[in-house]
Amino acid sequence: MRRLLAVLFAMTLALMPSVTHAVQPDEIMADPAQEARARNLSRELRCMVCQNQSIDDSDAPLARDLRLLVRERIAAGLTDQQVMDFLVARYGEFVLLKPRVEGQTLMLWLIPPLVLFGGGIALWLGNRRRRERVAGGEVTALTLTPEEEARIEKLIAAEEPQKKPV
Image (cartoon, rainbow, N blue to C red; front, side):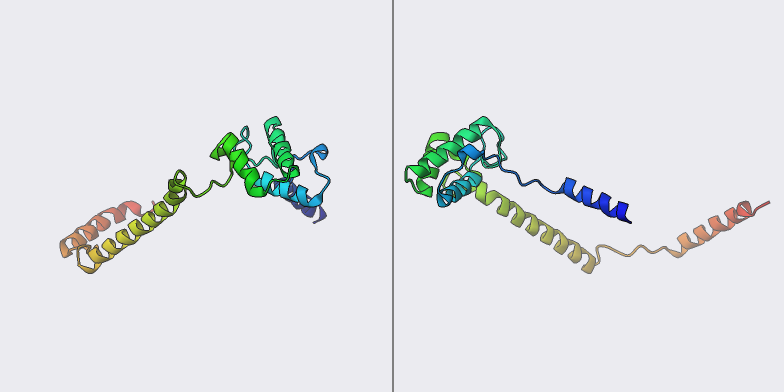
């Protein structure tokens, strides 16, 4: 029992997502409030090398440069919005992990709900048509005519002598 628990514990630890951050000790700001702002901003910015990781989680040199740039701008007294605007102006909208809702990204935000809504309507219409066919008598129950039943009985009777063990 102890061995089983040890194995389950080891598997749980192996499968748990690791919560590691790539921020190096020399990057951390002296002011805890500014460091918290920098970490929050870093979680919203995409690593241009890794692409599906925030710069807070990435070990790439470019991510480090971006983290230092964010901290530099915060130390200079810029607001969070000004820092984000600066990075978007410099690197484009792709640097944001969560794109802004604007004219350029409107389709990006609207397509998933529209596809989901359209799929729901298609399923509802298909189900409705199927019910109408069943209620309208288009789909009939599979029943055998008396001739078919007699033929089946004849076939079964012809096979019965072959099934008897010798």
